[in-house]
Length: 123
Image (cartoon, rainbow, N blue to C red; front, side, top):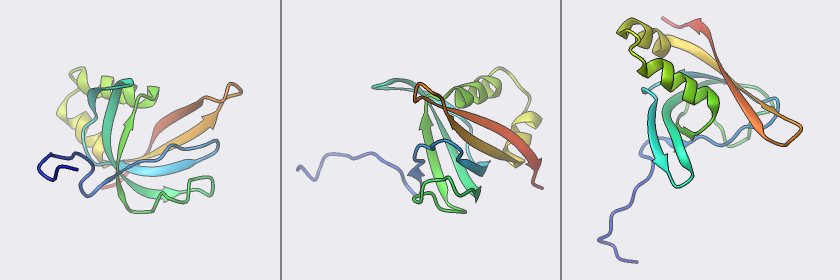
């Protein structure tokens, strides 16, 4: 391995693992959602901090830890679209102050769908 070659990865954050059926995570959004192209198509990158977990969450997810989500899930695409379509700064600040619930449900075809819902305002 050539030590002069650059490497890329997470800094103080780690990538968020996928969730399975019934998992619910309470979180705070810590960075604006951004769209980027990966080898697997268009994805959204989003910084979060976990504030609550239920018993269906993977053991590797820790409470009060910062993560980077990198996903093409519809809920993140929708968040990015709403964020980018000219919403005012008040709306964006409100999104950053809300606590959000991220839930996962596995469909019969084995695909997992995610839902991101604002729960309450944390001032």
